[in-house]
Amino acid sequence: MFKTSDLRPDEFNAYYAKYVDNVGEIGIPAALNESAAQLTDYLTNIDEARMDFAYAPGKWTIAQSLQHIIDTERIFSYRALCIARGDKTPLPGYEQNDYASVANMSDRQFRDMIEEFRLVRNATIALFKSFTKEDLLRTGTMSGGGVSVRALGFIISGHVYHHAKLYNERYK
Image 1 (spheres, rainbow, N blue to C red):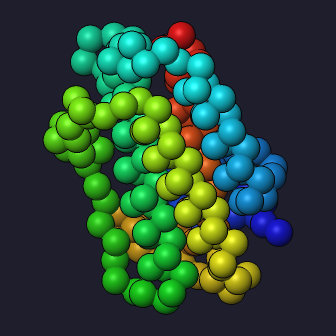
Image 2: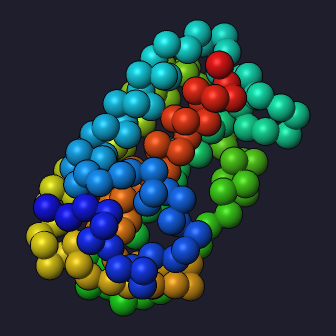
Image 3: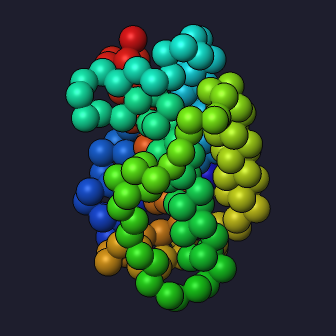
């Protein structure tokens, strides 16, 4: 239905352009499926013993990064739902480092985290499938700026593409 080239500049904050640009010219359903496949392809080939690996001091570990991806997906999907349903309440930003600093993964199995990502992504896919064209075009306020539901679909996908690329480049 919609592709990234259909987005108007006022449909998302310029900060998110890097994520939208990661998607390319495919629709939201394909972007959600392909970005998830790219990420899970990488993650399923990681040895559980490497989940605590960070590519540099002060950087997130593989597991922390995956938890960040899961948290962000939930937050952005919630934002899409609110806006699609016509909620005009401005949605606040969130500080990803605050979330990461309290997310305790010491008792988590990495394979369970991968499965959690799959489940969250499947819920996101189902959510976006439920949206009508009118829902996708609705706009709201997020992090102090305007955003459309369809832009959120591309941002969610692009965020995962971004992290899949980081994993492949820096966490080998």
